[in-house]
Amino acid sequence: MLKTIVAGVDGREGGRDALALAGRLALLAGGELVAVRALPFDAYAGRGGGPQHSALADAEAQRQVEHDLAEAGLTARTRLIVDTSPARALHRMAEALDADVIVVGSTRHGAVGGVFAGDDAAATLHASSCAVAVAPRGLADEEWTPVSRIGVGLDASAEAHQALALAVALATDCGASLVVRTVVPAPIADADLTAPFSGYILARNIELGNLTAPGTVAFTIADTSAVKIGFGIPEYALRQLRLGQEFTIHLQDDPKEYKGRVTSIAAGADEKNRVFAIEVTVPNPKSYLKPGMIASLNLSGVQNAPVPSVPLSAVVANPAASGRYAVFVGTEQAGKWTAHLRDVTLGETHESDVAIGGLKPGEKVVVSGTADLKDGDLIQVLP
Image 1: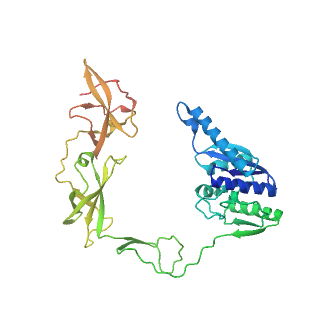
Image 2: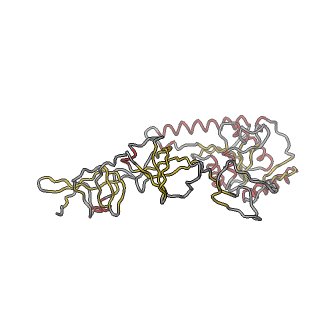
Image 3: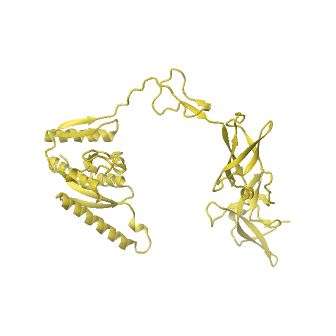
């Protein structure tokens, strides 16, 4: 009845259990047995010495597969396949061989004699081109006995119906009983929703009389006894900030001052505006501060270093550093001007200008024609 049976082996207990079940299936329903071992790396991707390393890895994997087959008393074709995902490797081999079934082992964390799919087995069950059989843990150590019962899990997926068809055919051939397992969601009676903390309801997603399902977000609740306010800080100010530093916060149309402390400083700048995100936590015992309000941060005591600014048209992507920016700086020698590419950091923008770090006041910068300009090109300086 079966043509090809693919068994996933890995040199461990689950792989030996898979071989034991695959051998039983071959005995019951015929079919050629193919033992597949996935190598979880690309041995040819390295530098010098890669092919030799690959040959050693292949030889060791082949030896392990042959050893497991000999221990199980089985004869099978062996296939080694390179893939970081064992499940994907088994899918690829099953499709190439037009296999009828893939056999995998249970996780070692399950009970002996039980079927409990681990990560690789669960991934193999999903989107397989053929039925997948999971061997009970410890099957390799049990004596071969006549099959009296075959179990199959059933849901609405195409994979489950493939498994059911195979299970029915096997049960018919060997005279075994068939046990079909499915999961039915338990009905949920009326229930009270209790918030894990006191707070304010920010969003209400259900109304009286609505039908809901498990996982439905009914309410969004916030504890506003202390609020976190996010700000974007330029690079010059970041160097003078520290965790725990106190600042004064102002709200629009509110003369009151609020004191808060820095509780988070981003490790990197935003790629678009080149500012660093910080969070200031402000006590809010009387709930004056509400989510969504606009606040400003007073950087008193933080010196704003003078930074040159240039038109945005002068800024180009730095071809030597991904994600960095540069400008062309003009230098004069023997009456001729030459453009030299210089890496810069971007600061605050104001209309069509942007603050630049990495330039000195008075240096000349190319502001037009930068798209076709290259480092070292001659340029003409206009008065």
